[in-house]
Structures are given as C-alpha cells and as structure tokens.
Length: 290
Image 1: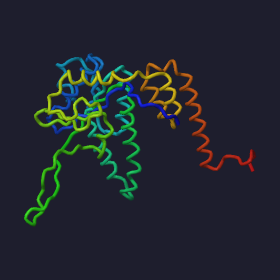
Image 2: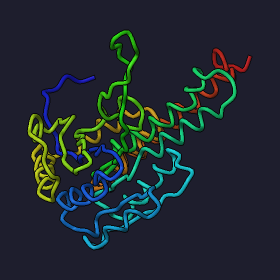
Image 3: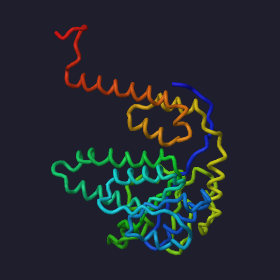
Image 4: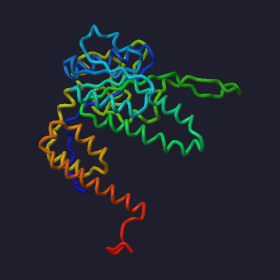
C-alpha cells in the first residue's frame, strides 16, 4: 500500500441517460458521442431496441451492433469488446434496461431460496458494471424509467401518490457513473449525478454536441496516465479478468508494458493453481506427500 497525494487523471467518461420511452435518449446519446470524439465513424451503438438506432442515420455514418435476446450481461460485455477492438472511441449501450430485466426473469426461474439465488445473479451484473467502468472507450448507457408511486394516507385511506421516475435497473447503479442525465418527455435534461461539476445545480437544458465537447474537455483536463500508474494497477490485480480489463483499457501501454502484463499473468495463474490445490487438499505437507 502506498500513501499518495490525490491527483485527478485524464479519464474516459462513464455516463448514463435516464428517461421514459420517447424522451430522446438515443438521439441525445449520439449528439453527446459526436461531441466527445468528433468522428461519426468512431461511434458505435449497441442496439437492443430492434434496430431503432438506425432511425438517426441521417446524423452521420456511426456504427451499429444489433444485440438480440437473450440480453445476458456476458453478451453486453462481448459487445463492448467488439466495439473496442473495432477502434470505437465512444460506445453507446442502448439500453442496459434489457440486461436487468433478463436477470430478473432468470432469477425468478431459479429453484430454491430466492434470497440465496441472488448469489448467482449479482456477480454477473457486477462484472458488466466493471466492464463499463474499465472500458478503453467513452461509454454512454441509456436506461428506461417508469413512473414510481408510494401509498400515502389521506382521510383515512391509502392513496397512490407519484414520487418521480424510477430507473428500470438495479437500485444504486447511478452511483457507478460519473455523470447521469435525467431526460423528460420533452427532451429536457437535468443532471441528477455529476462528478464533473459542469452541470450540477444548473437548470434543465437540451443536450447538444457542445454538451459532449464540454465533457471531453473535462476528461482531458486531468494529469496524463503514466507507465508507473499502469504498472501499479497491474500489480494490484487479483484475477486474470482484472488484468485483461487493464490491458484493454490502456491500449497505448500494451506494447511497452507487455513484460509486466506477462509476469503478473504468470503470478496469477500460479496463485490460482495453488488455491485449487489447497481446496482439494493436494498440497504436500512438510515437503513430502505423506
């Protein structure tokens, strides 16, 4: 462990657009994406909405990856990898609501204890969240919302009362993103979560290409990532999956830090084999097999 002075590093944006159907999430995401990279050919939409992303093809020649059911977390992760390997600078996941609905359906189909069955669901969902957070591309995820109600007592009766829009995703997911825009049915956006400080407390606005440019400037304003930073992160990995995530997150360092990646890979493989041997009781004691 090392105690260091806090520094904000240059980063890729991880943001979410939440809103009801018809609020303009896809169109707004595309405008943000172009502001972030300035090249339609470097934008990919992972489309779960039956080719709906193609409705905006008049904006420019962006790429589309049509994702059909089943909407497993693993298929989303594979789609992100395909986009990264295709050189995409911005990946739009439109939408990740389908992933959560799939997991809910899968959970309901499992036999046995409903509570303990979440142990089969949560790791898969968390793996997708981590894949989004460590992507080498900017990631914009759209989330569908629905009207939420609570029961309140009025004149001795329980009456439903509107309390705002609730996202159709796992509770607390918004905290994983750097920036979250809430869109209303008139396509007005407000920032409900903003670590950039660019939009906090500001009145509702229309999302434009300039909004994406503002966010890009924030992303580029931190200190550059150095080889030493990546080396430390490599050494902190606890699994091959974590190591691969870092490998793909920083393509500019893949060649120069290849020895460090390979060394950590061998170390993790040896540790994993040792743990398996301990679990099966096959580790010899006192240097012997007796």
